[in-house]
Image (tube, rainbow, N blue to C red; front, side):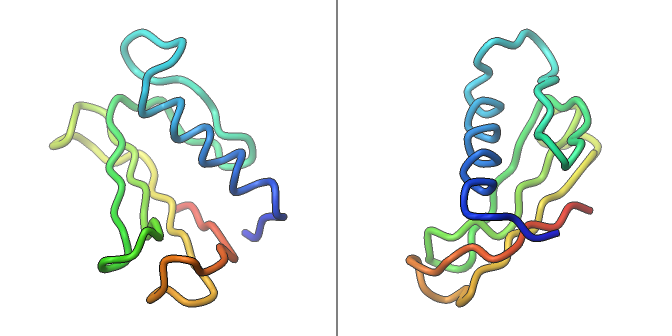
Length: 92
């Protein structure tokens, strides 16, 4: 799935709201439009090596050792540089 220029920003704002728990109690139920992220209570973010580029965002229920309910994989023009452009986000 490919996104236009504004869609990754919207997705990342949703991730930030989920991380900070804004407007939620217990499991986070904030949907990310088009990706249908299920309810979750933990988010794990992994980066490409030493860059600022997010490689995966993993959503879980039951905390850090819980069950993975969705994973987003982000792809960039060049994963080895921090200022590379985001080109796609895939949900699995």
